[in-house]
Image 1: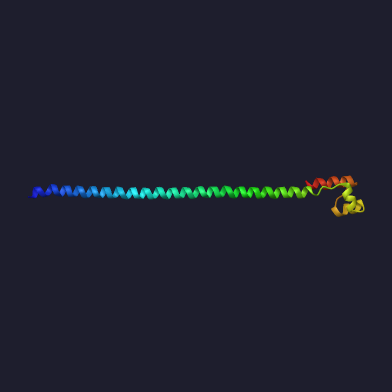
Image 2: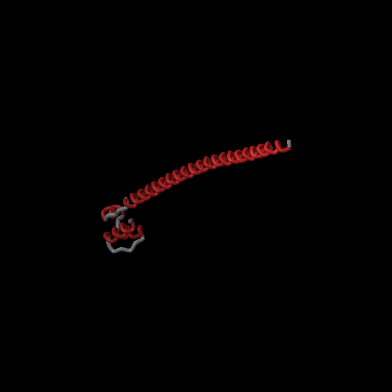
Length: 118
């Protein structure tokens, strides 16, 4: 009788070992699936962050360009001519004092003022 029980015990041991191996393989497969899904979500989030970053950079560039254009327009509005200055100031002396510049003529005053504007 002892001879008959041995093969059955071996078969049961092999069956248990096979079940354990299958169980471990199933868990590894489930863990791999979870890791794949997690990695996919991480990559999706990283892509979204990159898109948002690019969009923000473009918005900042647009704002800076807009500010520079406004500054350029403002500075271009201050173009002086001899006629404008003569209407604004009674004498060359008054104009020189107002702008705190040393010049000898209306023309040199206009040239200095316009050169400073750009």
